[in-house]
View 1: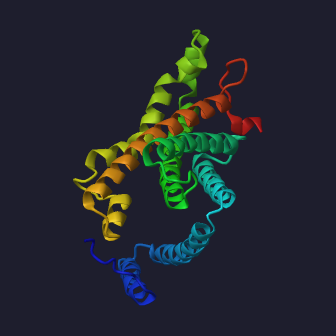
View 2: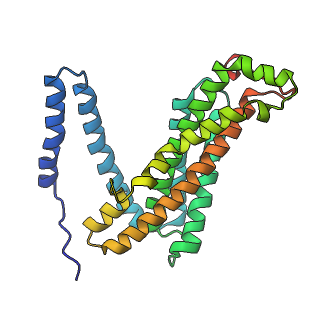
View 3: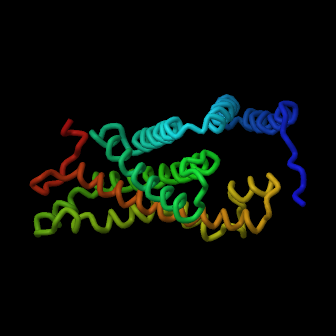
Length: 264
C-alpha cells in the first residue's frame, strides 16, 4: 500500500519561501552582490511555476492534441532562442538552425520513447508527452549552447591554423575536425557526468518526484533509466546537428573560412 502523498498548500510554500529569504539575507550580509539577483530569481520562480501549473492543469483537462503540439512547439522555440542568445546573436540564420536541430533531436527521442517504450493509450497523452519532452528540451538546450559556444570560439580564435589546413588541401570538415570533436564532447559533459553518478551522488528529478508521489522506488528507478538513455541520445544528436550548423555558417561555397558576423 502506497503512503499518502503530502499535499503542499500555500502556507507550506510560504514557509518554504523562507529558505530563499535566508539565502537572500546571507548574500546581502556577505556583500556578494547577489541579493537582488536571488530576489528576482525567486520572484520569477514563483510566478512562472504558478502560471505553468495552472496552464498545464487546463491542458491536461482538455487533452487536445492540437493544443499539446502547440505547447511543445512554443517550448522548442524558447529553447532555440535561449541557445541562440548564449552562442551569439551576431550569427545570421543561427536561430533557424538551432530550432531545427533541437526539434529534430527531441522529436526523434520522444517519438521512439512514446511509441516503443512507454506506449500510452493515446500518443499525445499529456501526462507523459509534456514532461518527457520538457526534460529532453532542457538538456538539448544545454548541449546546443555548450557545443555552439565552444565551436564558435574555436573557429574565431584559431583562424590561422584552420586556414593553413585549408591551403594545404584539407576540406572544411577536415580542417575543423579537432575543434568539432572537442565542442561535441563539451556539449555532452553534463549528461555523461549525470549518468556516471546517478543514484550514487544525486537523485534526479524524475525518481525524486515519483518517490515523493508514492511510487514504488524500483519503478521510479526504471523511469529514471529511461530518462538518462533519452538524454544521452538527444544531447548527442543535438550536439552533432549544431556543430554541422555552425560549420555551414562559417564556410562559404568556395570552402573559405568566413566570419558570419562580418557577412551580415
